[in-house]
Every structure is written in C-alpha cells, then in structure tokens.
Length: 57
Image 1 (cartoon, rainbow, N blue to C red):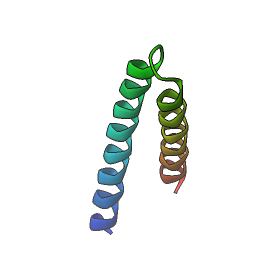
Image 2 (cartoon, rainbow, N blue to C red; image 1 turned 180 degrees about the horizontal axis):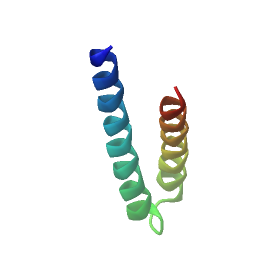
Image 3 (cartoon, one colour; image 1 turned 90 degrees about the vertical axis):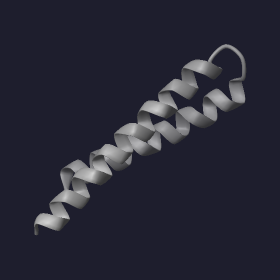
Image 4 (cartoon, helix red, strand yellow; image 1 turned 90 degrees about the horizontal axis):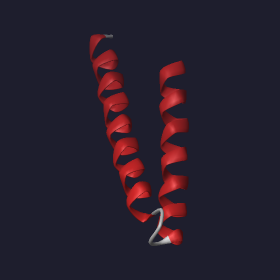
C-alpha cells in the first residue's frame, strides 16, 4: 500500500510540474502565437482534469 501512495504522490507532483510549464508556455505565447497559446491551454486543462481525478481517487 505504501508503494501505491508514493506512486500517487509522484504522479501528482509530475502533473503539477507539467501544469506549471504549460502555464509558462501559455504566458510566453499569449501575445505572439495564438495557435501555440491555444494548444498549450488545452493541454494544461487536460492536465488539470487528470490531476483532479487523481486527487479524488
């Protein structure tokens, strides 16, 4: 059971890091490249959904 908890914590941290980098990419592309901004926004939203699902489980 301890391994499962550690694995879940690792996955939560991984998702948080990916969300952070996606937010940074969105900020970088906000005024310069609308396509990349939208792509990263959708990616970030998907990551946030996965994170919420993982937190509920």
